[in-house]
Length: 158
Image (cartoon, rainbow, N blue to C red; front, side, top):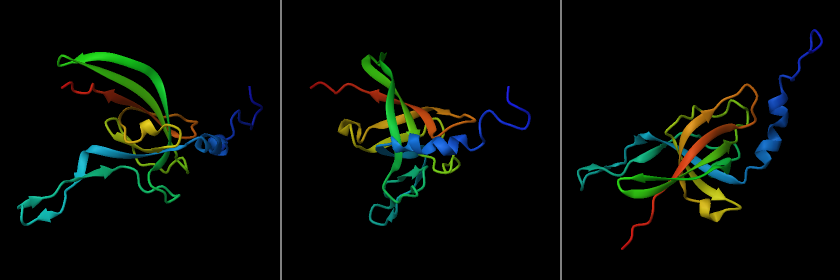
C-alpha cells in the first residue's frame, strides 16, 4: 500500500521506458485502410480514372524515413484450414508500432492492412501483407501494439 500522497507507478513511467521498446524496432511498415482509397487521375483517352491509391493511415514518421518503425514477432504457430477445397495457412503476429509521444498515431482499426517495407533481420518478411485483427490498449504502454494475421495461400500447381 503506497504512503498517502504517493503513487505506485510514476505518471511518466511509460514515457521514461519507451526508448527501450522502440530501440528494438528494426523493421518498417506502412498501414493502409482497404475501405478507403484516393481515385487515380482522370484519363481522357480511357474515359475514366486511373488506378486508385490506397489510403495511408499513418502520416510520415518524424524521422523522415520511408515507412513507420515497427517490430514484428510471430505469436502463434500456423493454423491450417480449408477454404473452398484448398488448404490455407494462417499465422498471427504481434506488430509493435513506434508511438513517439504516446499520442502520435491516428486511430488504427481492425481490418487495416500492414505492409512490411523493410526488415533488417528477415528479408523474407519484406513485402508481406498482414491484416489487423486486434488493436491493444492499456493504461501503461510503450508502443501501439496490434495483432495481425498473415494468410498464406498455397502456390497454384500447374
